[in-house]
Length: 129
Image (cartoon, rainbow, N blue to C red; front, top):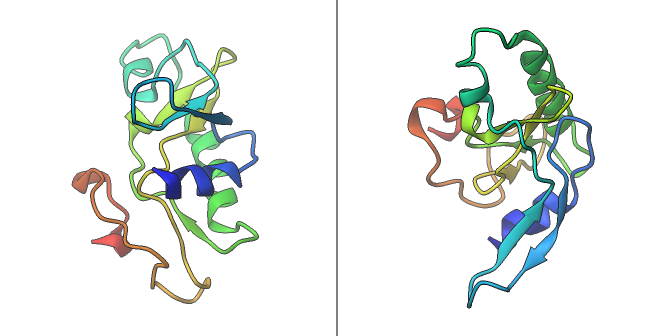
């Protein structure tokens, strides 16, 4: 979780959920504190046929573009799926859950600085399989 906190703390973008800090209020575990988004996750949000998913797709693409061109090196999310995209009150999609993310060494390398094990296999980035 410390790796996730370190990586997430470097991210500042309109399509990324803002990390506010950490808490140790729940026993010996470290919890990440982020903005609370009442609209929930994209998977649940798009189940309502009245909600247009297209703006979420544009936001997801914008967030991924930011990650993949990050100044520290390209970042692979590692577990992109509807449950890890949260919806803001103004119905925008924000990427969250960076527990399986990694910074690659360069744009021309598929090698990852730290192992990205876990995540959701059906949604895993091909370069992590």
